[in-house]
Length: 102
Ligand SMILES: [Zn+2]
Image (cartoon, protein in one colour):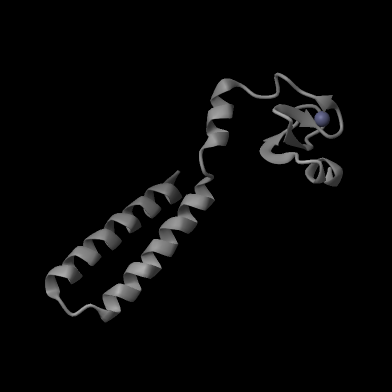
C-alpha cells in the first residue's frame, strides 16, 4: 500500500468489494493493492460521490467560517453589520443541522 502511494497512487474513499482493502487511483486506473487492477470497482454514481468533498470536510469548512464570523462579531460595532453577520451565522448553523440530520 505504501509503495503505491510512493509511486504516485492516490488513496480513494472506496474499498475493494473482494478484500475490503482501500482502493487506489494509480495512473488513471482504480487499483486494489491486494487483488490488482479493478476497472469496474465503482458504479458511476459512486464515482460522482468521490468527486464531492466528504461531509466531514464540508462541516469543517463551515465551522471554520463560523469561527471567523464569531471573531468579526466580537469586533463589530455597527448594528447593521452585526445583523448581517448574525444572519450568515444562522445560515451556517442551519446547514450544519441539516448535515447532522442525514
Ligand atoms: Zn481487493
